[in-house]
Image (cartoon, rainbow, N blue to C red; front, side, top):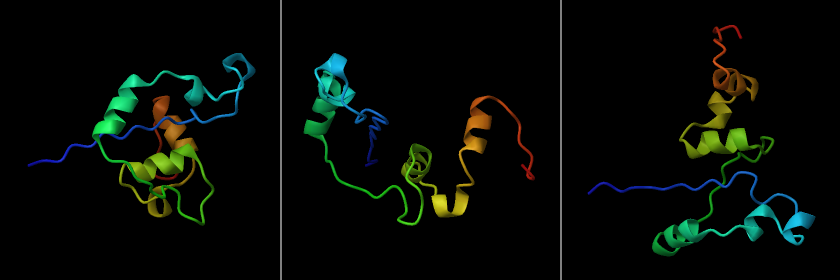
Length: 93
């Protein structure tokens, strides 16, 4: 039997509390019935997505979540941004 995974990455949702949300974060203020249901029916855990000697960032963390070792493959945020904008990069970039 194949195991299925749903990885919910609420990147930025635990930001600073905002006055317009009663001094709650976006995540605290949000209604999250679908995340709640998935969470109740699944398993949760903690994982270190950023190696201890790297600067924390969503780009590094998401690379880890997708199975790529950032210590081997991460060369900065610029290549990710370039691909998102359809900018071709050469091996020397």
